[in-house]
Amino acid sequence: MIEVAVLHEEGWPGVDWEMLGQRAVAAAIAHSPYIAFATDQALYEVAVKLTTDEEVHQLNRAYRDKDRPTNVLSFPMVQQDLLQGTGNTDDGEVLLGDIVLAEGVCASEAAEKGISIADHAAHLIIHGTFHLLGYDHMDDNEAEAMEALEVAALTSLGLSDPYGDRQAG
Image: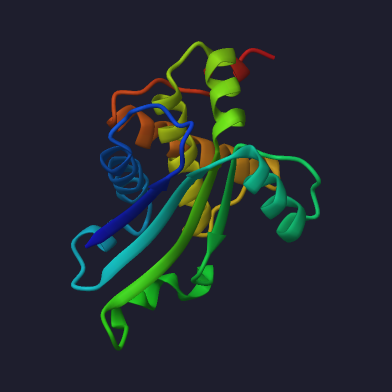
């Protein structure tokens, strides 16, 4: 079973963020090798924080040595090689990790793409969830595999391919 806790600060538009977060995380998990998390006895928890650019800037500097805000940060709590065995927890709960989005960066990117902040945030939450599941995009092969999974998850939510414009070239 999957549980998503969403905390959003002022500045984010009036959207049902709890539902959006739940749907986005569930879509990512459904398009991953960890689809069983949705029906396991264990409770898989993800925290999503929708916050300010300033807070994300501080986190990005502290944890990634990058002195700027970014759109999304992920903080996995389970090592990738241990994800398969998480259903055997003693207390039946698994904290997969935290996902943090920056409002200003998200709004700016959404405007640039001509989509709603909610749709872009759904993509970023899906992206962050794949990071919690051990995916990365450090090289071209990893990036292509992760992007394909993101597109499948987004499509299942009725959202368009955010990478479509990269195909030409």
